[in-house]
Length: 141
Image 1: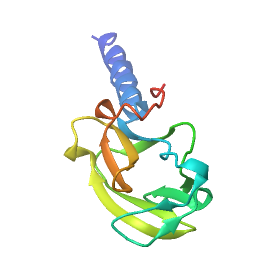
Image 2 (image 1 turned 180 degrees about the vertical axis):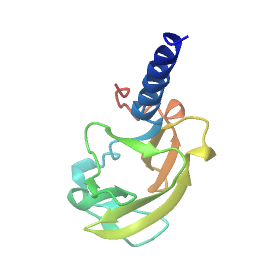
Image 3 (image 1 turned 135 degrees about the horizontal axis):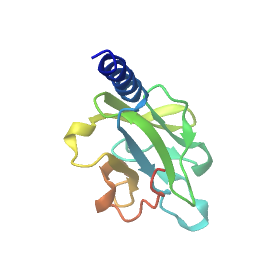
């Protein structure tokens, strides 16, 4: 009887440690490179209308993270986003917000999303990565 109690106590302790050390699942966003215009012409963003953005000053910010330059050649990946939180995406030109929107992972069937510039309307859109072949991020480790 005394042998079983220490064994049970050790098993409960190990189970508690494993539960605490297991990181909750998180989501990711793959940012597709911006569409290329001949000669690197400034980018026109809609629906803002007459707003133009030089490629070098175009960036994106997720929640309270620092803004990152919008990728131009290879997709960029942002990991570790809370699946339960409401997230804010801000698209910036020269540090000034041009487009802002919110999303929740519960709006999607996947936790791997693609953020891209629609080259027809020049708006930023967020889709599931499986429907966005232009997002070419490597899978998270």
